[in-house]
Length: 500
Image (cartoon, rainbow, N blue to C red; front, side, top):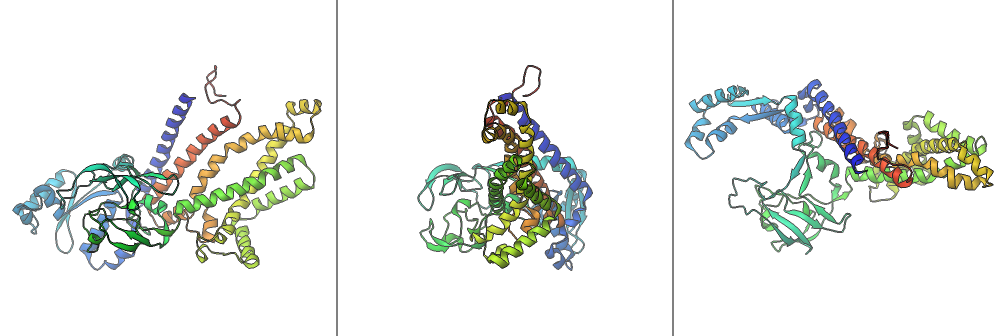
């Protein structure tokens, strides 16, 4: 069993690597990088300033992992430092120092040119596709440590990990010199113990979530800020929306920061009223799956037991209707009926995620197609099992039809259905494009198609990684689930080298 799990894990990781790498190759080789600015309004505003526009483009490309970019100031600082006379001379237009530096960078493979208006030097080097792939995977796992923050303006920064308490008095593992102030902390939200030591880096997003870490885009709460009274370490009490445990190092403090913070850990996320995109899609999907199984399994069993009769015909009519009618049509009809007959909100923002009414129509719109598929497969598995030899033997022993269905047929027919449960659950994180679009749900359903449309390439790569990871490991989880349901199924190698 352990050997199977190890081999399957390695195969899964290799599959994920292949899929994501292929996506990166297609994106970086087939899509012009200038298209990332398609929906960027800032660039259009500074078109009349050619130097600023050039710097803006190259800075964005560097953040998105396309190239390495250095301004004249960057080159001079790297060579001479920022306090020397040579550095100041290097900044002068066409000085001996910068001309020599430009030649050095050309020898390193950089393209060195001058800005169109001021004539300042800048250097850039495009990353090869191999370098981009290596940079993505090598920077994916980030481990916070006391030497992670490098701030020249704060040379006396103390570097240590220590035990302390947060503002509410709960114990916490804290750090000075790490990116995060709180490495381990406790709160009332599941799983109650949280950490900031190991973090996932999937790159930064571009328009419309400009320069935000992709993980933050999909996991941070949304909506309006929620304030509460907080007594800060300075002793000041104020109504604030900051989430203390999210605070990270901030090199340059704002004028009001010293009133609240005793150190540079002042870059904090605000508490918002709505759940994150991932949480909304996940909760909505879990609810839809729950109702789908709750309704479809007994109905599918009834259809199998009453094969060819009225109950079976009505169930098949529903299955055919859901398959035949486009999703957009019946979801729109369902929304119209729910809104006009029961007064349920037709758009998510009308009442927000905090109101249970907002969840009713989207959840049942997701449930409808799931019910039809589960009904069909439950009926099929039950009918197939009903012709097996062990069923004939059970009938010969005098068992009733109800006993045969519940104790024998259902036990075997439920195995392939149970195998798909993990896949259905983790698949809900990706959301539902049509449903979330119709109801304007602020989940993950539209995130991938919207990112493709906006040429938000880093987001596309990150979501490809996330969805591929979840899909492949959900199949693995399905295998483990069926072994728990039926002990006769084994994942170990048999004598002939196959798997049972």
